[in-house]
Length: 152
Image (tube, rainbow, N blue to C red):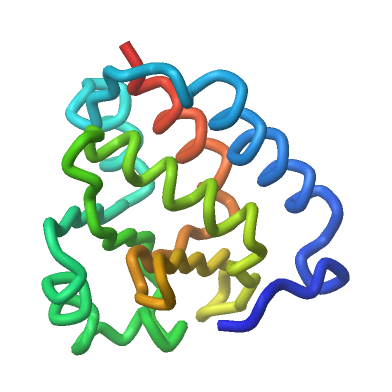
């Protein structure tokens, strides 16, 4: 995935990602230690938007997991995130940090899959993939709010 072309993303989406992912993480969430992806509210949202989340302990496990998934090519209409979890962080905070990195480095794109538009995200560390995911544009705000709300 190439770095974003802002004219293809749209100002509203760019503003949402900047304020609700990047700034929120930097200003509100960086110092919070306790997040829980198993919270009732997040699980309800996860079910509502049919979201799959898979946290892996090693980059090799991530690559093995995604090797056979069609979503990596932007072909499957599915809300899914697969990422390498930082062992010092909860799964929720790790996922939020990966999203923050993707937004900060402009490694995301908008793509139409089936009848819906999706945002596809990637994060890298030392040129190695550490997160890949996609979320239906209509579900983005709800997902970000639910993930933010997992902090205790």
